[in-house]
Length: 310
Ligand SMILES: [Zn+2]
Image (tube, rainbow, N blue to C red):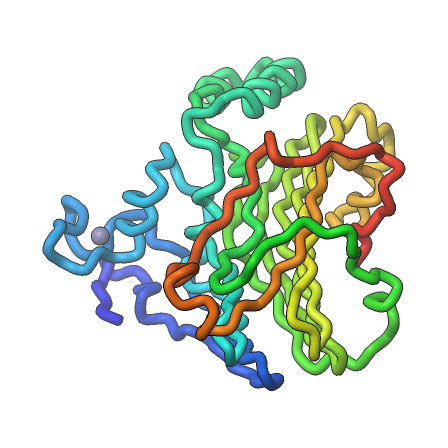
Protein backbone atom coordinates (compact mmCIF):
# COMPACT_ATOMS: atom_id res chain seq x y z
CA UNK A 1 0.00 0.00 0.00
CA UNK A 2 1.39 3.40 -0.88
CA UNK A 3 1.45 6.05 1.79
CA UNK A 4 1.40 9.81 1.81
CA UNK A 5 2.50 11.99 4.70
CA UNK A 6 -0.32 14.25 5.74
CA UNK A 7 0.95 17.55 7.13
CA UNK A 8 3.25 15.89 9.65
CA UNK A 9 0.46 14.11 11.48
CA UNK A 10 0.43 10.40 12.09
CA UNK A 11 0.15 8.75 8.75
CA UNK A 12 -2.66 6.29 9.19
CA UNK A 13 -1.95 4.59 5.89
CA UNK A 14 1.28 3.31 7.38
CA UNK A 15 -0.42 1.70 10.35
CA UNK A 16 -0.38 -2.07 10.10
CA UNK A 17 -3.32 -4.16 9.00
CA UNK A 18 -3.97 -6.93 11.51
CA UNK A 19 -5.14 -10.12 10.04
CA UNK A 20 -5.73 -13.69 10.97
CA UNK A 21 -6.69 -16.70 8.94
CA UNK A 22 -8.06 -19.91 10.35
CA UNK A 23 -9.10 -23.07 8.61
CA UNK A 24 -11.98 -25.17 9.85
CA UNK A 25 -12.27 -27.57 6.92
CA UNK A 26 -13.94 -27.03 4.51
CA UNK A 27 -14.14 -23.40 5.67
CA UNK A 28 -11.43 -20.82 5.44
CA UNK A 29 -12.13 -17.89 7.77
CA UNK A 30 -10.18 -14.66 7.59
CA UNK A 31 -10.43 -11.20 9.04
CA UNK A 32 -8.46 -8.03 8.48
CA UNK A 33 -8.58 -5.04 10.78
CA UNK A 34 -7.01 -1.62 10.49
CA UNK A 35 -7.29 2.16 10.63
CA UNK A 36 -10.25 4.37 9.84
CA UNK A 37 -10.89 5.89 6.44
CA UNK A 38 -9.06 9.12 5.67
CA UNK A 39 -11.23 12.22 5.74
CA UNK A 40 -9.94 13.27 2.32
CA UNK A 41 -8.18 11.94 -0.76
CA UNK A 42 -4.77 10.61 0.19
CA UNK A 43 -3.27 11.06 -3.27
CA UNK A 44 -4.18 14.47 -4.60
CA UNK A 45 -5.75 17.78 -3.58
CA UNK A 46 -8.32 17.35 -6.33
CA UNK A 47 -9.10 13.71 -5.67
CA UNK A 48 -7.85 10.69 -7.58
CA UNK A 49 -8.17 10.97 -11.34
CA UNK A 50 -9.66 8.25 -13.47
CA UNK A 51 -6.35 6.88 -14.72
CA UNK A 52 -4.86 6.08 -11.32
CA UNK A 53 -5.97 3.39 -8.98
CA UNK A 54 -8.22 5.38 -6.62
CA UNK A 55 -7.43 5.68 -2.92
CA UNK A 56 -9.89 4.24 -0.41
CA UNK A 57 -11.42 7.63 0.33
CA UNK A 58 -12.19 8.18 -3.36
CA UNK A 59 -13.60 4.65 -3.74
CA UNK A 60 -15.96 5.26 -0.82
CA UNK A 61 -16.99 8.77 -1.79
CA UNK A 62 -17.58 7.91 -5.47
CA UNK A 63 -19.39 4.67 -4.78
CA UNK A 64 -21.64 5.97 -2.02
CA UNK A 65 -22.24 9.61 -2.96
CA UNK A 66 -23.41 10.32 0.58
CA UNK A 67 -23.36 14.00 1.65
CA UNK A 68 -21.01 12.91 4.39
CA UNK A 69 -19.52 9.70 5.69
CA UNK A 70 -19.95 8.37 9.24
CA UNK A 71 -17.36 9.77 11.69
CA UNK A 72 -15.49 6.51 11.58
CA UNK A 73 -15.48 4.12 8.67
CA UNK A 74 -13.23 1.07 8.78
CA UNK A 75 -12.57 0.14 5.16
CA UNK A 76 -10.12 -2.63 6.09
CA UNK A 77 -12.27 -4.30 8.71
CA UNK A 78 -13.40 -7.22 6.63
CA UNK A 79 -14.57 -10.68 7.63
CA UNK A 80 -14.54 -13.33 4.92
CA UNK A 81 -15.69 -16.95 5.06
CA UNK A 82 -14.85 -19.06 2.08
CA UNK A 83 -15.99 -22.63 1.49
CA UNK A 84 -13.56 -24.80 -0.44
CA UNK A 85 -16.24 -25.48 -3.07
CA UNK A 86 -16.58 -21.78 -3.80
CA UNK A 87 -19.35 -20.27 -1.66
CA UNK A 88 -18.21 -17.02 -0.06
CA UNK A 89 -19.66 -14.81 2.63
CA UNK A 90 -18.16 -11.43 3.43
CA UNK A 91 -18.85 -8.45 5.67
CA UNK A 92 -17.39 -5.06 4.79
CA UNK A 93 -18.11 -1.38 5.40
CA UNK A 94 -18.49 -0.30 1.78
CA UNK A 95 -21.26 -2.78 1.06
CA UNK A 96 -22.90 -2.02 4.42
CA UNK A 97 -23.03 1.69 3.58
CA UNK A 98 -24.45 1.01 0.10
CA UNK A 99 -27.82 0.22 1.66
CA UNK A 100 -28.07 3.58 3.46
CA UNK A 101 -30.92 5.57 1.92
CA UNK A 102 -29.70 8.42 -0.18
CA UNK A 103 -32.49 10.58 -1.53
CA UNK A 104 -35.24 8.38 -0.11
CA UNK A 105 -36.55 10.40 2.77
CA UNK A 106 -39.59 8.78 4.32
CA UNK A 107 -37.79 7.13 7.24
CA UNK A 108 -35.53 9.96 8.19
CA UNK A 109 -38.25 12.59 8.01
CA UNK A 110 -40.13 10.74 10.71
CA UNK A 111 -36.94 10.78 12.74
CA UNK A 112 -36.37 14.44 12.04
CA UNK A 113 -39.85 15.26 13.34
CA UNK A 114 -39.15 13.40 16.56
CA UNK A 115 -35.87 15.18 16.69
CA UNK A 116 -37.50 18.57 16.27
CA UNK A 117 -39.81 17.85 19.18
CA UNK A 118 -36.98 16.97 21.51
CA UNK A 119 -34.34 19.48 20.47
CA UNK A 120 -35.80 22.63 19.10
CA UNK A 121 -32.64 24.50 20.06
CA UNK A 122 -30.26 22.71 17.72
CA UNK A 123 -31.71 24.13 14.55
CA UNK A 124 -28.41 24.19 12.74
CA UNK A 125 -28.03 20.49 13.26
CA UNK A 126 -31.62 19.90 12.24
CA UNK A 127 -31.11 21.82 9.01
CA UNK A 128 -28.40 19.41 8.08
CA UNK A 129 -30.37 16.42 9.23
CA UNK A 130 -33.49 16.98 7.19
CA UNK A 131 -31.64 16.88 3.91
CA UNK A 132 -32.78 13.91 1.85
CA UNK A 133 -30.23 11.56 3.23
CA UNK A 134 -30.46 9.08 6.03
CA UNK A 135 -28.18 10.74 8.56
CA UNK A 136 -28.70 7.77 10.90
CA UNK A 137 -26.84 5.58 8.37
CA UNK A 138 -29.48 2.89 8.89
CA UNK A 139 -28.42 -0.13 6.91
CA UNK A 140 -30.29 -3.28 5.92
CA UNK A 141 -27.02 -4.99 5.00
CA UNK A 142 -27.09 -8.73 5.56
CA UNK A 143 -23.63 -9.54 4.20
CA UNK A 144 -22.12 -9.93 0.76
CA UNK A 145 -22.48 -13.42 -0.69
CA UNK A 146 -21.55 -15.41 -3.75
CA UNK A 147 -22.31 -18.93 -4.90
CA UNK A 148 -25.28 -19.41 -2.64
CA UNK A 149 -28.87 -20.15 -3.62
CA UNK A 150 -31.28 -18.22 -1.39
CA UNK A 151 -34.58 -19.73 -0.29
CA UNK A 152 -37.15 -18.68 2.25
CA UNK A 153 -37.33 -21.15 5.08
CA UNK A 154 -39.37 -22.07 8.11
CA UNK A 155 -36.28 -23.50 9.78
CA UNK A 156 -34.96 -21.35 12.61
CA UNK A 157 -31.57 -20.96 14.23
CA UNK A 158 -31.57 -23.04 17.38
CA UNK A 159 -30.81 -20.30 19.89
CA UNK A 160 -30.90 -22.71 22.83
CA UNK A 161 -28.11 -24.65 21.23
CA UNK A 162 -26.13 -21.42 20.82
CA UNK A 163 -26.60 -20.51 24.45
CA UNK A 164 -24.88 -23.70 25.54
CA UNK A 165 -21.37 -23.16 26.79
CA UNK A 166 -19.70 -24.82 23.85
CA UNK A 167 -16.00 -24.30 23.48
CA UNK A 168 -15.21 -21.24 21.36
CA UNK A 169 -12.46 -22.05 18.89
CA UNK A 170 -12.35 -18.65 17.27
CA UNK A 171 -13.92 -15.29 18.01
CA UNK A 172 -13.69 -11.84 16.54
CA UNK A 173 -15.56 -8.56 16.64
CA UNK A 174 -15.14 -5.95 13.90
CA UNK A 175 -16.62 -2.47 13.70
CA UNK A 176 -17.57 -1.52 10.14
CA UNK A 177 -18.62 2.06 10.80
CA UNK A 178 -19.66 4.32 13.65
CA UNK A 179 -21.12 7.82 13.96
CA UNK A 180 -21.87 9.86 17.07
CA UNK A 181 -24.64 11.94 15.48
CA UNK A 182 -22.93 15.16 16.56
CA UNK A 183 -22.84 13.94 20.19
CA UNK A 184 -26.56 13.22 20.16
CA UNK A 185 -26.40 9.45 20.16
CA UNK A 186 -24.71 6.69 18.27
CA UNK A 187 -25.03 4.66 15.11
CA UNK A 188 -22.76 1.67 14.87
CA UNK A 189 -22.51 -1.30 12.55
CA UNK A 190 -20.42 -4.25 13.65
CA UNK A 191 -19.99 -7.93 12.98
CA UNK A 192 -19.08 -10.70 15.41
CA UNK A 193 -18.19 -14.27 14.66
CA UNK A 194 -17.66 -17.27 16.84
CA UNK A 195 -16.67 -20.72 15.73
CA UNK A 196 -17.57 -23.68 17.91
CA UNK A 197 -16.83 -27.38 17.44
CA UNK A 198 -20.21 -27.92 15.73
CA UNK A 199 -20.46 -24.81 13.59
CA UNK A 200 -20.19 -21.04 13.39
CA UNK A 201 -22.45 -18.15 14.30
CA UNK A 202 -22.29 -14.59 13.00
CA UNK A 203 -24.13 -11.54 14.30
CA UNK A 204 -24.09 -8.47 12.08
CA UNK A 205 -25.71 -5.65 13.99
CA UNK A 206 -26.67 -2.09 13.17
CA UNK A 207 -27.50 -0.20 16.37
CA UNK A 208 -28.94 3.31 16.52
CA UNK A 209 -29.65 5.40 19.58
CA UNK A 210 -30.83 8.96 19.08
CA UNK A 211 -30.69 10.29 22.63
CA UNK A 212 -34.18 10.68 24.13
CA UNK A 213 -35.78 9.93 20.76
CA UNK A 214 -35.34 6.50 19.26
CA UNK A 215 -33.58 3.15 19.48
CA UNK A 216 -33.32 0.89 16.45
CA UNK A 217 -31.55 -2.44 15.95
CA UNK A 218 -31.21 -4.27 12.63
CA UNK A 219 -29.69 -7.71 13.16
CA UNK A 220 -28.54 -10.37 10.76
CA UNK A 221 -27.81 -13.73 12.34
CA UNK A 222 -26.15 -16.46 10.36
CA UNK A 223 -25.65 -19.97 11.62
CA UNK A 224 -24.01 -22.92 9.97
CA UNK A 225 -23.73 -26.40 11.35
CA UNK A 226 -20.64 -28.14 10.02
CA UNK A 227 -21.53 -30.92 7.63
CA UNK A 228 -24.70 -29.31 6.31
CA UNK A 229 -24.89 -27.80 2.85
CA UNK A 230 -26.61 -24.60 3.93
CA UNK A 231 -26.51 -21.65 6.30
CA UNK A 232 -29.51 -20.17 8.08
CA UNK A 233 -29.85 -16.41 7.90
CA UNK A 234 -32.30 -14.40 9.99
CA UNK A 235 -32.77 -10.68 9.51
CA UNK A 236 -34.78 -8.71 12.06
CA UNK A 237 -35.56 -5.05 12.56
CA UNK A 238 -36.53 -3.65 15.94
CA UNK A 239 -37.39 -0.14 16.92
CA UNK A 240 -38.99 1.91 19.67
CA UNK A 241 -39.28 5.51 20.66
CA UNK A 242 -37.44 6.14 23.91
CA UNK A 243 -40.64 7.55 25.44
CA UNK A 244 -42.34 4.18 24.82
CA UNK A 245 -39.57 2.36 26.62
CA UNK A 246 -40.16 4.43 29.75
CA UNK A 247 -37.21 3.84 32.05
CA UNK A 248 -35.96 0.69 30.47
CA UNK A 249 -33.58 2.35 28.05
CA UNK A 250 -31.75 4.26 30.74
CA UNK A 251 -30.89 1.07 32.62
CA UNK A 252 -28.94 -0.40 29.78
CA UNK A 253 -26.04 0.68 27.68
CA UNK A 254 -25.43 -2.52 25.76
CA UNK A 255 -27.51 -3.09 22.61
CA UNK A 256 -27.86 -6.77 23.52
CA UNK A 257 -29.53 -5.78 26.79
CA UNK A 258 -31.94 -3.36 25.15
CA UNK A 259 -32.86 -5.54 22.17
CA UNK A 260 -35.36 -7.82 23.98
CA UNK A 261 -37.43 -4.75 24.91
CA UNK A 262 -37.70 -3.43 21.38
CA UNK A 263 -40.77 -4.44 19.36
CA UNK A 264 -40.01 -6.47 16.27
CA UNK A 265 -40.88 -4.43 13.18
CA UNK A 266 -39.81 -6.90 10.51
CA UNK A 267 -38.13 -10.24 9.92
CA UNK A 268 -36.96 -12.48 7.13
CA UNK A 269 -35.73 -16.05 7.32
CA UNK A 270 -33.55 -17.52 4.60
CA UNK A 271 -31.62 -20.63 3.85
CA UNK A 272 -28.37 -19.95 1.99
CA UNK A 273 -27.63 -23.14 0.11
CA UNK A 274 -24.04 -23.58 -0.96
CA UNK A 275 -23.41 -24.10 -4.63
CA UNK A 276 -20.20 -25.75 -5.65
CA UNK A 277 -18.05 -24.00 -8.25
CA UNK A 278 -18.96 -26.60 -10.86
CA UNK A 279 -22.66 -25.95 -10.51
CA UNK A 280 -22.37 -22.25 -9.93
CA UNK A 281 -19.99 -21.18 -12.64
CA UNK A 282 -21.48 -18.32 -14.52
CA UNK A 283 -24.50 -17.98 -12.27
CA UNK A 284 -23.15 -16.01 -9.37
CA UNK A 285 -19.64 -15.23 -10.45
CA UNK A 286 -19.68 -11.82 -8.83
CA UNK A 287 -20.06 -11.15 -5.15
CA UNK A 288 -23.54 -9.77 -4.92
CA UNK A 289 -24.57 -7.31 -2.29
CA UNK A 290 -28.06 -8.52 -1.73
CA UNK A 291 -30.28 -5.71 -0.64
CA UNK A 292 -33.18 -6.22 1.68
CA UNK A 293 -35.84 -3.68 0.91
CA UNK A 294 -38.53 -2.52 3.28
CA UNK A 295 -41.25 -3.82 1.01
CA UNK A 296 -39.89 -7.34 1.17
CA UNK A 297 -39.75 -7.33 4.93
CA UNK A 298 -42.49 -9.42 6.42
CA UNK A 299 -44.00 -7.67 9.37
CA UNK A 300 -44.86 -10.03 12.13
CA UNK A 301 -46.38 -9.73 15.52
CA UNK A 302 -44.47 -8.78 18.61
CA UNK A 303 -45.11 -12.27 19.93
CA UNK A 304 -42.46 -13.65 17.62
CA UNK A 305 -39.90 -15.66 19.53
CA UNK A 306 -37.17 -13.36 20.68
CA UNK A 307 -33.80 -14.26 19.25
CA UNK A 308 -31.91 -11.12 20.03
CA UNK A 309 -30.12 -12.11 23.19
CA UNK A 310 -27.29 -13.90 21.52
ZN1 LIG B 1 -8.16 9.68 -3.79
